[in-house]
Structure formats: structure tokens, C-alpha cells
Amino acid sequence: MHILFIADPMAGFKTYKDTTYAMMREMAARGWHLSHTLSAQLSVQNGQVVAVAAPFTFIGAENLHDHAWFESGQPVQAALSGFDAVIMRTDPPFDLQYLYATQLLTLAAEQGAVVLNSGQAMRDFNEKLAILNFAEFTAPTLITTRAAQVRAFLAKEGDIIVKPLDGMGGMGVFRLTEADPNIGSILETLMRLDTRTIMAQRYIPEIRAGDKRVLVIGGEVVPYALARIPQGGETRGNLAAGGKGVAQALSPRDREIAAALAPELQRRGIVLAGLDIIGDYLTEVNVTSPTGFQEIMAQTGFDVAARFADAVAAAAKAA
Image (cartoon, rainbow, N blue to C red; front, side, top):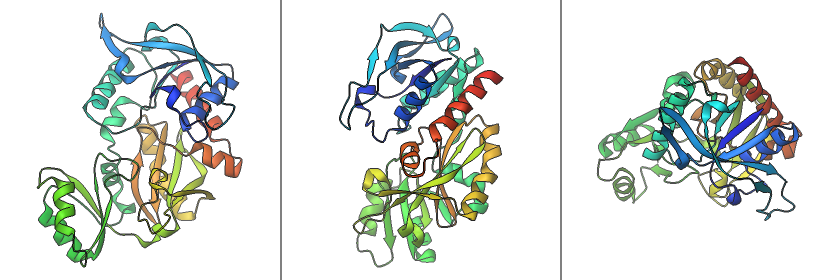
């Protein structure tokens, strides 16, 4: 197997927690050949989607701050269809450049490349808006560009969360109550004077027990979730916002939600998805670069990376 990773520069990986690192480690242990490229190094030449890809040898990090965990070979230009699988692991935000990359990945798939997750799925599944396809599992939700509609929603619900549709890591997420003296300022900043679409959701008090990341891999639900628990009075549980990650067995409701979504995710070419669940409610469907592998593996012993590598091998075989 020869796998091409489209990911951010590898020297910047935080190897002690990076999910892409865990994927690479598992695949290297299986004897697979690995190459790396950046999304900016994708191009179309003579009608073929190609990348300037550098093969690399996985050495492994010796400590938490070791950035010399790989040895790169000479970069070569290669068609994406020449790899057994192409894994898109570039971190959000999903901006125009990300959009263009997914369009090239869709073209590459039409030329025979096995792209995981599919370019079409990454375009269709905005990580915030995707929950609208599964309304039976969501808390009351509003999508709008109008601050007046957010105020009306706040008056109805009393306690809400507002967030941009293109954020990541908890950036731009605010909790609003009717008593908040800064409602106008927050909405003006977030919505840019009614020119930016946002999401508003009823506040779910169970966030105090954690924002649970539930992984679905190859249509199968990983039996453990990573609960990101807010710290120090924070509303946000995101690890990037200082949340504490605690792995735990799935609740019956977690399983119900994940099992209901799994067939649809697989049908759409989503081999790896990270569902965010707070209490009994689905809040996001992450498909661009879901994380949580290493924390679950370290705390439970369940080999998430092996499950993912199995799914990649199955997708390549089925192509």
C-alpha cells in the first residue's frame, strides 16, 4: 500500500496528541509506503490531478517536543490516481483554498483516485450545518444572517450559544443570556453587521460533563468517546480552548445517534467522521480533519488508528 497524506507541514505536528501522526505510525508499522504533500501543492497538468509529494520514512518521536520524527525523501510529481489511497488531513478553516482543494480531489476521484474523505462530502458537510440533515437529534437551532432573529431566538430560549459556521477549536463561540449587557456588541462582531451567517443553538447545560467526540470509522462506531470538559469557568470544552479530554464508554444515546448517522456517512464517502454530542444532542458533524485518536487510545487501549487503517485498506480494495 502506498498512501498519500495531504496535511499541514509535518514538522509542526504535536506528536503526543496529533491524530494524523497516529495514523501514520500505524500504517508505517504495517509496512505501508507513505508520502506527504500540502493542499497548496495540488495542481492539474495535462488533465490529471497531480501533487508534488515527498515520500518519507516514519522514525517516531523520542519525546513530546521531537520534530525530527520522520525522514523525507526527494519530492516527485505524481498523479493522485497512482496512490492506493489519498487521505485529506489538512486542518480547517474551510476557506476558498480548502474549497478549491476539495474540487481537485473530486476530479482526482473521477480519474480513479481513492480519496478519503471524499471531496464532495467535505463540501456538502459543513461541520455546523450538517446537523440539519439529522434534525431529530439536535437541540433547537437557528441559522441566520440577521441579528434581530438571533435576539428573538434568545428571547424564546433564554440561554443560547452563537458561533460562526467556519470556526474551529471553539473560536468565535459565545454563550448569551437575556441578562448579558454585551449582546449587541457580540452580535455586531460575530455577524459583521448582518453580513455573516451564524448558528444559534439552545444552551445545553450538560456541556459541564463534556462535549463528547464520537468517532465513526468505515461505517462502524468506535465504542469510546472523548469528552472535552470545560475548565476554569469556560463555556467551551474544545481542547484548543483549554478543555480536558477524558475518554469514556458511549452512552446508549451516543450509540443511538452514531448508529443512525453511520450508514448515511458511509454512503456519502465519509470514512472518518467525528460527531460532537452534548448531553443527548448532536451539535456538529466533523469530516474535514477529525481528531481524538491518541487520547482514546492512551486512556482505553482501544486501537482507533488500527481501525482507521483497516477502513483505508478496505476502501482501497473495494475501488
